[in-house]
Image (cartoon, rainbow, N blue to C red; front, side):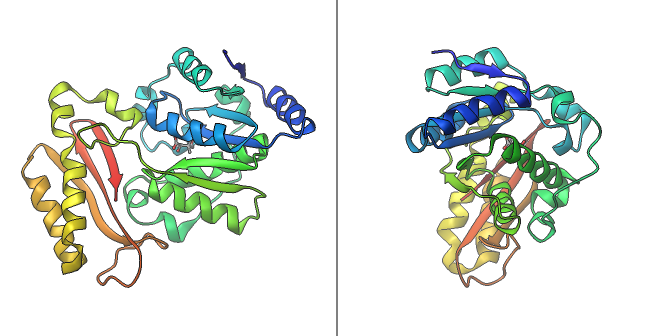
Length: 276
Ligand code: PAF
């Protein structure tokens, strides 16, 4: 069934209030659209775990550090709505920019300790934009559960921390990364890859797996092993590749607890991120 597309905050609130009155829990899947099987996994978890599922589709200008990247971001609402319909979503919340930001925001959510490394070092203001819009979406949807992909590990850590620090009355549910058969993590950005870049792209996950296999030799050796794999594809430009503490997201030089190996790599004009 085709879900209702709510573009106004007031209408979305009517629908969630109605669901709550009927005794349903509300699940929220925040997205920027261009939905793919990775989002499908988030939606399936929400559908399985809650009685009323809201998918938000909003390309958030506040989190883009480059205007050309914002402009190039795929906007395919019609097919996104059909995708949501196939997965039993109750409402798609797709507000125009003026509904979310009737005036430029003067209030921001920052999570500096978790946002200053990895992607945060290279994308000024990105996580401030993410945390601010996610806080707004949580206030609008008031979900009981919200679903985020593990592919964006730093985003997930920041949102989890924001929820704890600001006492949002909801639970964040992390969902494992969905991959193509050749290992490439699903991302809305993959559709921008040329056929040749798409052929090369799985090198990122291969490099991360190689690092994981070398981790017993220490973070330095693991990092080098991944960089060696990436060097095999000279057109892949490494932005960062780090072994980080899974809690603080800061690089470690000794393994003392759970770690993540996270990387960002450019193929032509497309930036891919992944982690294990
Ligand atoms: O992961 C995304 O698509 C976005 O960063 C999010 C969480 C929807 C906020 O705009």
